[in-house]
Structure formats: structure tokens, C-alpha cells
Image (cartoon, rainbow, N blue to C red):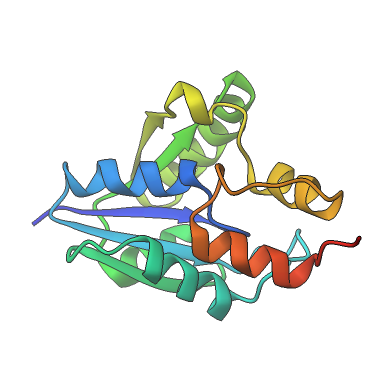
Length: 159
């Protein structure tokens, strides 16, 4: 049985994130979505809130949602992951993710696979979604309905 780990902050989950997970379901026997407590970012949603959104957005039987902090390689070992899967939007993602992949390989031998995003999600990021909502824009086409509702709760519209 092959287990893929799809890590990220998912703050909040977007259609791009869900697309990567859905494609992993077609390839791997088991998919663990690892929600990281990123110490370098101030999250909008708690880990528990992000996990709850992902559980709703990832209804596949072979998908598990779990939170973690610390090294990715330690969490991967804990959940029995054979490979890490990361979505890539642009060359800038590749530069950063390649460094992480090489470090993870150095630390533990863990391999990373990259999945190119669908073109319609190439510009999409959680940070951009939060910025659009904070400035009064709509993101219903960019995130699942449960996420749009949660964002509306954080950034109520005025007027």
C-alpha cells in the first residue's frame, strides 16, 4: 500500500489544494493531508478549523486529515508516508519546493513528487484569497463553499 502525504498550511483551503488531493486519490492507496502549524506565518484559521474544512472538502474514503508541527520528515515517518506530493503553480514555487524536497531527501530519504496545477488555478494562493476577501472581493469561484462561508465570517462585508 502506497501512502502519499500532501502537506501545507491550507489557510484557507482552495480549489487548487483540493485538486491536488483529488489527483492523489487516483494514484495512491492512501492520502494523508497534513495541516502544518507554520511558525513563520500568523494563521487566519486554527489547525482544527482548517482540518474541519478539509474533511468536508475531501470526501474520499482513502483521505485522512491530520495536523502536525515540527519537521515534515518526522510527521511523514509517523503516518507511514512513502512520498510527499506538492502542487506547483509557477517556477517560483518550484525553486522553493525543490530546496525543501532536497532537504527532506537528505534528512530521511523521503521522496517528493510535484504535481503541476491546473491552468485555471495557476494564480491561486491562500494568501491572495485572504487579501481579496479582506478588501471586499468575492472568492466563491476560488474556494469550496464551506471555506467561502468561513472567510465571510472572518471578513464580514460592509454596506
